[in-house]
Length: 457
Ligand code: SF4
Image (cartoon, rainbow, N blue to C red):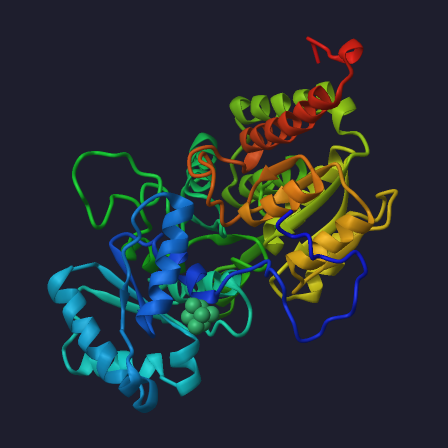
């Protein structure tokens, strides 16, 4: 009973977060930066922040995360970190020779007002950026937004590398949002199946789910190249998957480089995947191959076979807005009842979307943006649920309230598989369904009387 002090009575809180349902902005910026080929993320702040960001990513992806830091001490904290960053850029290119340095700020460097753009210009003037190398930057003050905001800001910085030549390349830009490396792989597999030419950015597949080869390679094969990022300005359009993670970069390309964009939900579950496939078909002018229809049919088959185990089961969810919107829609399409939904990322639009999706759910639905897991726990105490879906931090609530629990989202610190088995698209839908059914049926087995303990379910 680790959370035994969580009271059932809910009191209004305006200036206190307990058990946040988010983490800090630079973690998102660092994850996005790792999706550029040959990139070394750089944290402009103190060593402590960088160590925390790296270790969170390492614990989730089970891969060593390399990142540099401006290593602020008292002097930089008072007088500004320009000298530290200039020295860092020089050292990084000399010692590690990356293709790109992707700099993000921290609370400290934002508070003292360091100007990334000005420092980068100075580095260029002083010849600290070798020819052919790239430095990009994103402002990621963690006292606003969340890791999702940091991811989105770094993605926008990637979009800003676009250099239209005036000649279209016939490709579709796809911004996948914060999904697992294997999810990015799965989206690429589908687009290849459909014959769609694409540029995906960021792309962490082959970077954070690589094999153990026996050789250390600081910059793995994967990642979007700088040439591809420049070419995004010549693409026929952009599909941004997720309003919170991906839309800013896509809208920037649309407004500044005349690359039209569509913002879609992340393709988790049947309906959101249908919309993604249809958008790809329309924009690339291709038809849907038999294999894609087959995979869709398999998901529909499993849904109809297993409907009796899902019908009207109440679910509590916590995670990031883009993922939660599609997951809530998926659960509703299964005739399940998402009743408590919390994200730590701010945005009233989230609450409106969830209310719209759950309008026919036959129970009261609680939803909160900029909420926390303490509130989620209180809601569960007042209105118990049959299933809990969320990141590793949910394990305390699941244990205390004895709820079947599916780990999904970020971070997952205590299980394996999320980097390798996709949950996007139709095949991913099968995986999600398998995980949900697994815990619900295990619970049914555990609680069944001997007379009702079934061999075949
Ligand atoms: S100081 Fe800010 S950037 Fe650094 S770890 Fe804390 S919240 Fe994150």
